[in-house]
Amino acid sequence: MIVVALILDVVLTLGFAISGRSSHAEVLDPVGIWGTWWPFLAALAIGWVVTLAWRRPLDVVRTGIPVWIITVAGGMLLRAASGQGIAVPFIIVATLVLGLALVGWRLIALLVRTLHARNARKAKE
Image (cartoon, rainbow, N blue to C red):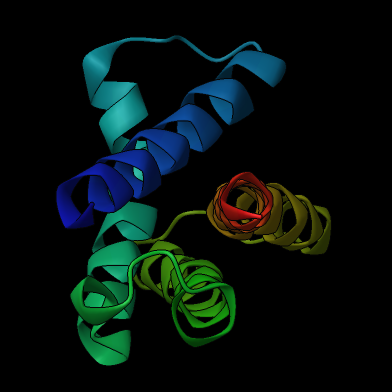
């Protein structure tokens, strides 16, 4: 499950970068996408290390929320350090979209696990 969680986080941050470029009619070439994505990818990696995400990759509170906050904050700091823009509207959109992505899939997984456990208990009755 660790690999699946990591892949989901990576793919969702990539999707964020691609959708952001697309919504601003920017070229969707590999170099441009990489330029937008790498600060968030690096911050995501930092988030995984800081939270020890591999121990509880599906945990919403101990992994999802901290990884989300670190990804947004770190991504913005890296963008600023590399001379990329960090306008307030972009920070707001990035916070909302990455929150929905990085926390959202974990909430869905929690719901599925809860329903599965409930159904398993009912089946035993």
